[in-house]
Length: 87
Image 1 (tube, one colour):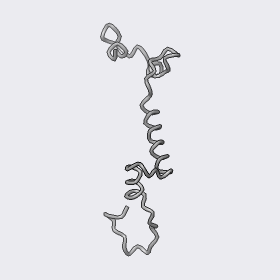
Image 2: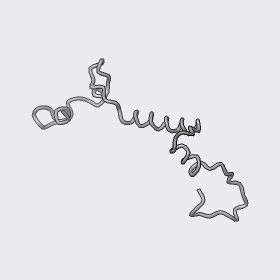
Image 3: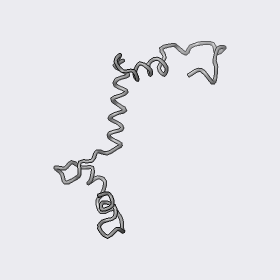
Image 4: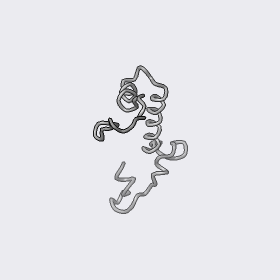
């Protein structure tokens, strides 16, 4: 199928069908394939939402809150700053 969509039945040439057409719903004549960009954005927003809600059942959210989004303030006089270990 991939070869037909890109090369046609003759095996040479350019794409016969545009990605916008392929990614459109089946009811509109497309194949109903989801666009990877939109799917990636939706999944990333879902993870951000889970972090903001502080989902306690998610191990990933607990890790992010503990190791990446520490609740410590970064205010100080600069004497204890460590370039390689401080976030």
